[in-house]
Length: 69
Image 1 (tube, helix red, strand yellow):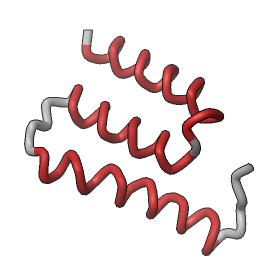
Image 2 (cartoon, rainbow, N blue to C red; image 1 turned 135 degrees about the vertical axis):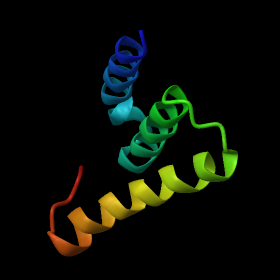
Image 3 (cartoon, rainbow, N blue to C red; image 1 turned 120 degrees about the horizontal axis):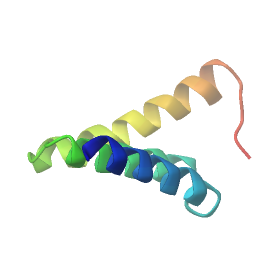
Image 4 (cartoon, helix red, strand yellow; image 1 turned 60 degrees about the vertical axis):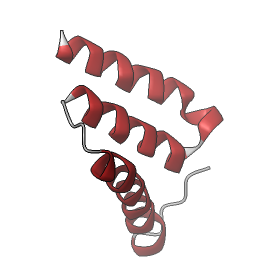
């Protein structure tokens, strides 16, 4: 059941990426997948997803020169 829910979350976030933007989308995806995985510590849920999104953005845009439009 958890795998199905995770797949549904991923599809929903991919479909919403155009409207919410890349950083918010990655943050939302990471938050929801962590929550579905059983993580309940809000200190981790509120810090790791934004850091992950900003890290991915920094690697692609600043290091690799790939821009998301």
